[in-house]
Image (tube, rainbow, N blue to C red; front, side):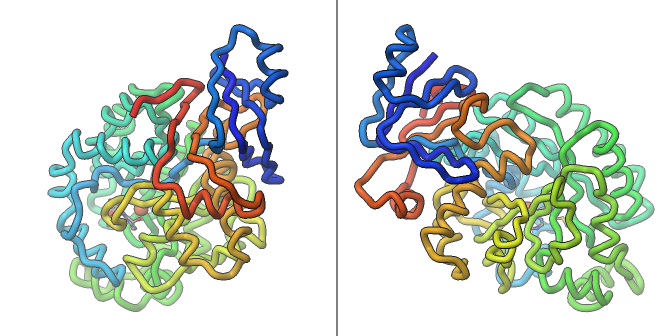
Length: 404
Ligand code: MCF
Ligand code: FE
């Protein structure tokens, strides 16, 4: 058992309760939050960790990364989604070969140092599975499937099944195999049907990129635009496989994280099972439009924060991503936005992934990040934490301190 005393404890519960000069008592799970003296009396055997004037909070959850593309710096074309997607289709196998074990380990460490304990990894090829499984971080490992060509449906399903089986052999409470359908413009309906049935039957989490760009909207809603031209290079007279609505229908009854949703009609989602993953930097680099985050929040849709991969970001430091969010969204009062972002990075992300963590309250798994404290008005704490922190001071995953 451990007792961690800190000046500020951000519980990240629904009410955003903040404790001052208290202590969190935890083992693998959180026991309770008490006054430090009471905690020492009640748990005399426990290790006492005095974090002085620091801030303790639930560790962050980065719900969307692509570690296999970690070697990218300047290979891909930014500014327009269809130009970017054409550039990654050409470069993706090569980039994934360049993403050596050391590069991926380094990026996992960057995330952990910034306070991240749980990572939603979208895996295109499965090359990073072992590295993720042996890392101290918790992974939800989304095996990706895609393919628009009806002649390769069986081959794509076979390749996916083989990768899924390999990832399932690595299962543990810190490595959770899951399924990703890449996107409606790249995936044949028979593949989407297979993947969603597979996830439903095996109670697996799913993820999908959805309504990311103006081109995807024009394609799915009207069958025209830059996607038609691009796909026309491979297929004669291409037609969209789905409308936005018919695509979402495949995911009925399946817990799914829909990533981007810049042009999505949120009403299509099942509020109990579906959530929105927001990648602010990626959206900026791949297009000109932004998610209506204020509307997501005001209408009570579950959302989480992702960095996306280095294929569409310049940093996997999660605090960099949170800061970018503060500058991208102007629809909410700033300190309120900061609190919502912290909830999206903890409590709401855990709910999206159906994990028993993301808040500091009794019975939750003890994933705790500690940040350097400072003097400020309590109402500004979330905001100043995002603005001033470059890295966490320490990180506990399932109650165990990580070394970095
Ligand atoms: O989230 C971003 C942008 N949207 C779509 N795909 C990707 C992103 N980052 C990496 N990707 C990968 C995706 O997983 O790019 C490939 C897929 O393997 C595109 S293949 C049409
Ligand atoms: Fe992505």
